[in-house]
Image (cartoon, rainbow, N blue to C red; front, side, top):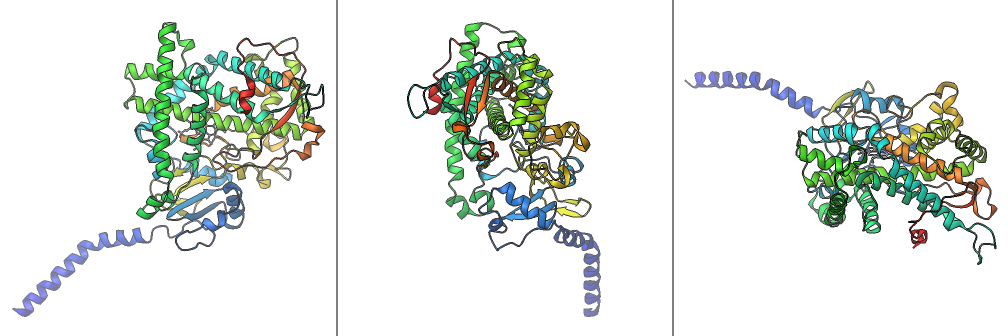
Length: 536
Ligand code: HEM
């Protein structure tokens, strides 16, 4: 009997092992996952790779690390694995070969607070909500046709920009500027205001009442969204959540932004009611969103929380990036007088006999476009692109590496744009002509050439390229057409400070001050607001 029992027990154990074998094997496979993670620098317990990033701008520190550890590198920021792609081949893996696996965005504690009652496009996880809103952006809100239809507002803002420069730089009778000399103007501040006004006008059709408060909040929002907090690095730790003020700040920011946005939407409704129904050509982006909401033909609910979030995305993603690029373009031209003269000669030749820059003329400004292209190469405004998230473990990246599920994935567009192995020995030089000669002629930023990805690529590529370029080309052409430019106090070009400041965008560390002399007269505007308020 005992023997019988024993033999039947063995029988059952044997059966159980046979049945459980596939499960055990799967578990072992899971445990052995990421047998070949990308290489990376040494790490400390708890804080991981953070010491390698202290004291330098993240895109520069990551470029230096990738030179030692390779084009696909694994870092650990606290608990969070972070994979960084730093070569065209690695960028292609992330944004083309495995684009679907890496198409989501991380939902950090801070971002969850910022998007509490509505997700827009930029931070939405890969899924139906994002797909529908993205389609709306590409086909309706930011399409080439829509961007063209918003031309008049942009031209009005460009006219305001040149009128502000003329008014602020008119010779001062008082010291410290010598009598009769043009006063230096803060070109950074003027361009930032021009770009935000042009984007705000595209989105809501006009300036907004509480504009300065709104712009301040928007700037704060970009900083809060970009910040990497203690709670984001240690998502499983209650202590980190308690100690980190980021989520609290994000919550406060969210309530204030909601209040301001409701004011903007209300103002817009009143303007529309006063003007009567507009035609399609005059629709701004908020009109389009409200029309689509009314028609109800989007497959995800377009409630007011979502509309607010989309508008905030358009302001947030569009303003700082475009302004930063324009500021660098002006700075690079001041450092390279031959390129400045060439761009200026082209603009004045194309516009000979005109008194202002109309957008049609931009089509003929070939060199101006190269100047902006070269600026985007050297100064990718979002140097690490927007972070992506690896949705599930992905094997065989770059042929051999496993990227762990849940990892944050960054593409160092800034490092790729300056790589001497790709761009040649003069990779760090500003030379717009490189795009019309040799191997790099025709390399473009629209997501097919992985040597040059300032707007990203793949499913998440920036949908605002056409609007961004329109605003930049018009702004730059207007400054070059109306004014001659010099560095204040006769400083030499190589004295111009080109340092970058800290932030999600690679903005200039210090404001760009220049002296402008009117060359082609500037039309007087009846409604020019007090330009001095810029400096207050
Ligand atoms: C020089 C100007 C600009 C630059 C350099 C730029 C750059 C970028 C980059 C690098 C990304 C992330 C791409 C990725 O993850 O692969 C992005 C996303 C985005 N950009 Fe832009 N951008 C610019 C202008 C604009 C403008 C004018 C708008 C609209 C007003 C805009 C709207 C967006 C949106 C909505 C996203 C999120 C797309 C998504 O997640 O699906 N951008 N941009």
